Image 1: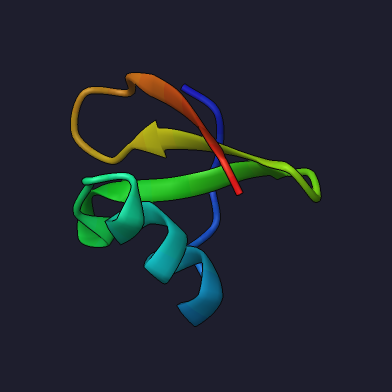
Image 2: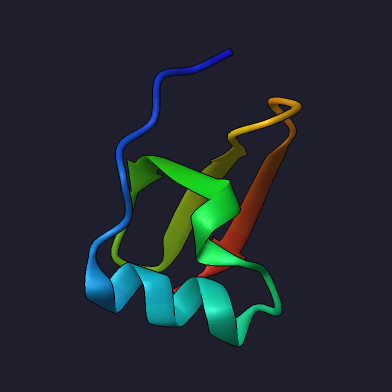
Length: 50
């Protein structure tokens, strides 16, 4: 599993807009147009458009 960081307030809003719960996700990679997320529980990976 990749090591992730806690999302910032701005990132939390983007995660909520994607229909996910920000408490369940960690940010692994940040690009100006993408957020790479990893789930805290099962390690699944999602990519959302920022």
